[in-house]
Length: 301
Image (cartoon, rainbow, N blue to C red; front, top):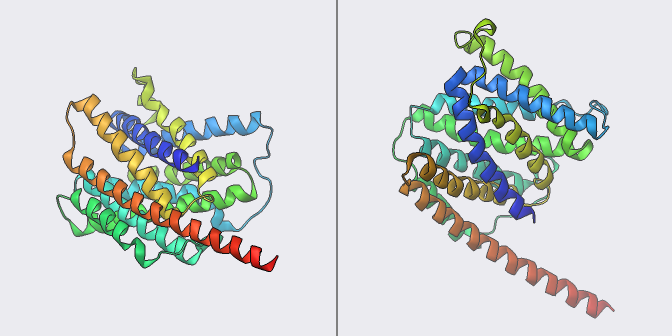
């Protein structure tokens, strides 16, 4: 079930990106980021009130509250890379950054997460995944490449911190903190970088009401992330989200532009193949370890 929820996260992210793109075209990058966080904060605050949960249930380690702030940095990094390298390159390099961060978290159990060792047998799957990433990159600018890679790593970091906070509070309260802190940071970024985009006296609502739903979908994504992050490998979660994102993104492109991105399609197929190989190997390892444990219990009895 958690694998299906991870794929759903990828699909929701693709739709969210399309909505947020319309919002950005209407108001500008940094103004749109503030609006997204306002919408998301209002929604999740209402949910917490309905559930009669406490907004501030206690004090925890300060870094656990940084998920929303890091999420804003992800947006800023992607905005920096946009226009310097292709969107498919940003997507691929972001996946690479997420994969490296996910493997590190799995291998060493960082931030108190469960360990998932990366064995040599999984190199075949990893090579297929890397081939999928490379197939999606068609241009190169060192600064944009580095920033896109870092943006991918920040996604995993933000997702992990939100999930750890949800363990201490709830998935809803953790999501509230994500948008509460994210709104505060996005306002600072707006003041520093986006003052020329929009002023309150000139603000008008767009007739395309759906562009304001990005914040709503964002809440859904963070809620789902808080549910599944601690249940499956960070590396596999990244790949499942990516697969859902790529294939739904290809479908959205077909609907909007009547065209198919061959690069993204090939990259998605290769990543899916690599993921499948590693999942099969994990399944075999699980069955082997289960057989060994049963044998030990039988002999000890």
